[in-house]
Image (cartoon, rainbow, N blue to C red; front, side, top):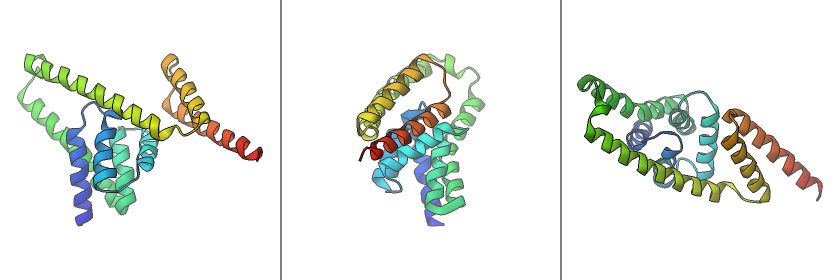
Length: 180
């Protein structure tokens, strides 16, 4: 039970500190899950994040579920998921119960402007870290560039992009090993 509570509280911290969702949560996840708890390696976290992006639902929930399940099975997945969503539920309930036009308040608008700038910086930092950790050779550079072009100029589902990258990686490795 101690481990389940630990999963809940760790993912509660991630949930309460994550603004902007998506990739903005990576530095927070990395700090809590990789650096503090050693529940996953950086590579595993990136893998969970990638799979979480391709599956239906919120990336934070999917990633929490994967890591929780890895640590303590189904109950670990449930506790980690509840931990990551609880802060949002509490905050939304408080906002909804007290303020009808919450975003019209100048102070709140200013706060969100500041949050957006901070999230942009976190995203840029995460992208740089992902590039350093995820691209290991020329084939990786080519896959990354092609993926960037597809994402930037065409509306393609992340599922197809990841599946295409998987297929390209497998083919490239097979060709490379065939030359040996």
